[in-house]
Length: 216
Image 1 (tube, one colour):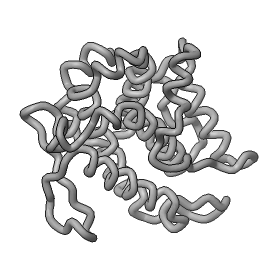
Image 2 (cartoon, one colour; image 1 turned 90 degrees about the vertical axis):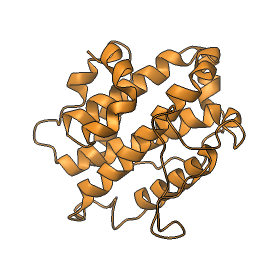
Image 3 (cartoon, rainbow, N blue to C red; image 1 turned 120 degrees about the horizontal axis):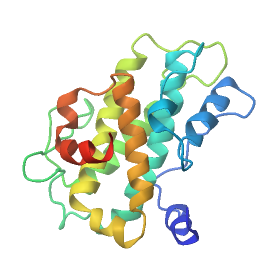
């Protein structure tokens, strides 16, 4: 990554601190392996496959946290251009509109401006990945039975961030020289969720044509 690009992605533009894994733990080793997949020359399709002998929940957990951190950072770099005026609805072009529902304040799907949707989304994910009952950090503490279902919902909603950024703000990504980095993050995410069947194919429709060109 170039020095200029590092400056873009190292600015304190993330909405919240990164969730980290403790060094010396099995999950930390898996986290390092997952992170290494962003190195140039790595075969991303092979990198996302569940390592032999590893627990699928552990593998999914480290990736969900990693993708949350990365996508949070990507959105953070363009968030000053994503305003209630420029993006009065959370959408992916004219065909796709995303409504927010969290069973707390928003009990029914509600149309919101994109920045408000993004803030609610990142808060909602952060609460879950920092909940020890859902993402246990202690060795030997089991994941909940519905863990993969929870992760599917998180990943589905994170995909919508890619949709919005690519369709409405990619010009800013190009101006910042971050196109290659964002594309690599997207490919890694796409290969992972399709390898483990974590997102319904119809959710991937908004970026279908771009994905066909990018992810062979």
